[in-house]
Image (cartoon, helix red, strand yellow):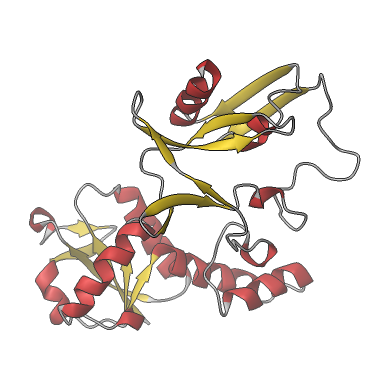
Length: 250
């Protein structure tokens, strides 16, 4: 298998190195990088040459891996196909390469859960939950924008029945249905089959308990119990904490 790696300006070079490492572990041949930044042409990354984008027509390759976000990949791929730079089957995202790497690493393991996951990957994309949780859009929460902080939010119901604003990053991607934005299945991580299930059996949050949410993202777990717990301790990335502070003052 021969691959090329598509690079874009201002992309963290660390990602390019990780892609090289995964391809090398698979035993694939890396033809080089094809960059949309003309200043990078005739240079090298991880000892692999960097070519101008137009060289993609002349190079020998089977698959092109897109070194950027999945959202941008879905936008750029049709344009590359329209320019006849390759076919739909030839352009892949980083998650596809990660899936091939994981399959190769674990294909000989006898663990039934691992084998079930590999079987799932044969017909599905890799994801956080894989076969354990499916986003079915059983619940849809409409997205609003708080103009005072320019952040999107939904009204999230706590276990006590209160409605609180739950904020998301400004660049969060939502489901677009007839021009309106929605969050689907906000509590999918707490479904009985989810590996992220925190509340199970007798392990519950009771009135007056202290909730420590370590590695908080949107904060939907802690926010769910905000009106019954006595104290909350939230730890996460700075932009997550900023959103949660906004929730606190509202």
